[in-house]
Length: 308
Image 1: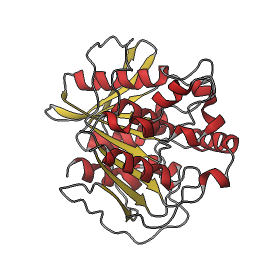
Image 2: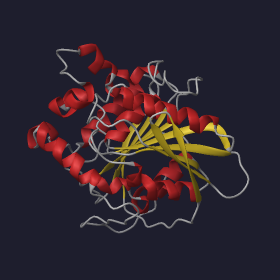
Image 3: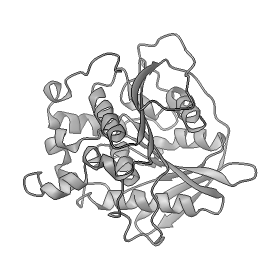
């Protein structure tokens, strides 16, 4: 059941306007800031059942959390920079790979640093990854290859327990979804040769149907959908939803998101569940598009779902 209706994404904003806005909004965020939406509601505890509904939408109010300092290190894989945060205490730890937004052409792991530190303080070995941006070269499949390689690294880390959740915001949610639905296309140039598909996916304000984005994805794919239809199909999570029926997904969406419509999440959840996977959509009350990077708003929701 969906509470509320979509906002007519395609009719409200042109693809060019969305491209500009997604890049500007994602790249202008201050890492580690606590940007609270203008409109808030009273805090309500988020509830999570032990069995995730096949495809449902709930509304959750905003909460405030704190994080503890963690130790960090950096790892250089070919063409990929990873910030690796290992929790204090004895492992092995479950791993989380964070993938930033920025409209496929901008952004950096700094945008996800606050969420990375929150998750590490909660006991997750966190890999905050960069990826190839669609500026000087075509982004697909290079950007997806980079995320796939980061997932392999997280799964193979000596302090990890071998499990991986991919967590992406905006464009990063699109990339994370492709890796979570990978059927053997990605990560071929990674020095870690063993393929790994994430056990779970957390999408934050993700646009999961590239067919609705039009010219916004031209730098990413390098040509239009009529010129390379097979590539657009392969790079469209909505069309790849049947690849991993064992996947469990949490799709968070801001109630006040005017850049990416709620229907991106609900349509993707419907496609996943139709293929036999588990998917839960949650609306974060009062939150805008960029607020979903903020651990004060989404951290407890993510942890509650991961530890259900």
